[in-house]
Length: 105
Image (cartoon, rainbow, N blue to C red):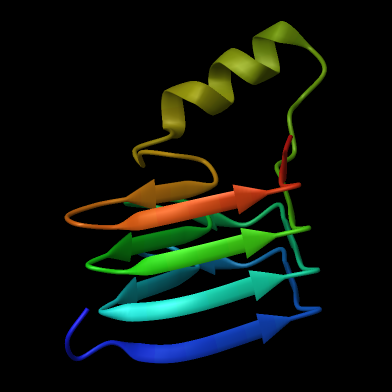
């Protein structure tokens, strides 16, 4: 991909962040992400964790998780307030992603 930025993220912990349009936004990026954890991040728009467009992502041995209320009434109330799309990954225009040993919880 012409004009891509090569990036590597290893052993990152991204927890309890609040964002407007995604915790991490990638455009024209060729990225390797491995041995990392994304837990309980929130965003008003797009996705709670990674938004990618025109990018190539290779994600390995990484955990994505979100808090979920145990009571159904609390869970339903939480769902009513969500305006984003995708809890873990939002892959937009011309993005290619490889997931290996990735946990989505």
